[in-house]
Length: 166
Image 1 (cartoon, one colour):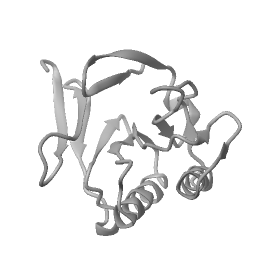
Image 2 (tube, rainbow, N blue to C red):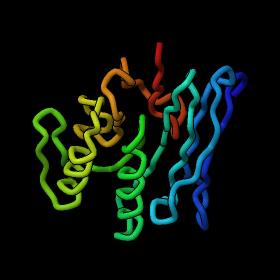
Image 3 (cartoon, rainbow, N blue to C red):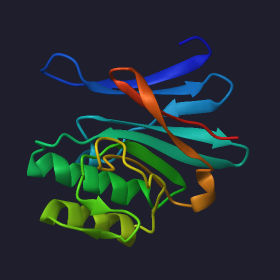
Image 4 (tube, rainbow, N blue to C red):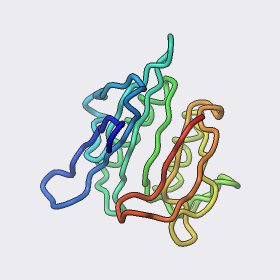
């Protein structure tokens, strides 16, 4: 895409998949690596430099058939990144969480909800993103980091939403 820098992590060992994050060229950004125990198969992380501060932005895909080990890595990544100014977004496939009431059914969904709350993260997507479920979410360490989340009709099969900031 013209005018954007691409950060990507392709799915290993299988055709298709992976994650890709585009950031405007006018924004100073660079890719970062997390600690080994937080190194997720399908996640990309970068720092955006804004004046004297840095914002960590992550894009994560969590498969519905995820292994316990990979799920733990995603949790470790969120724990690590949430200690700084951050925005974490992606398809987390936690379809049984009610984000308005902060309730869930199922062990994995409850563990994820506890993680988000224990990390003091705000979740900004409150309407269904697929069917009746909120699978795609945007988390931030400060509510004011995300001004507006708009659920768009997919225009490309692998692209669902666009997050923009003023």
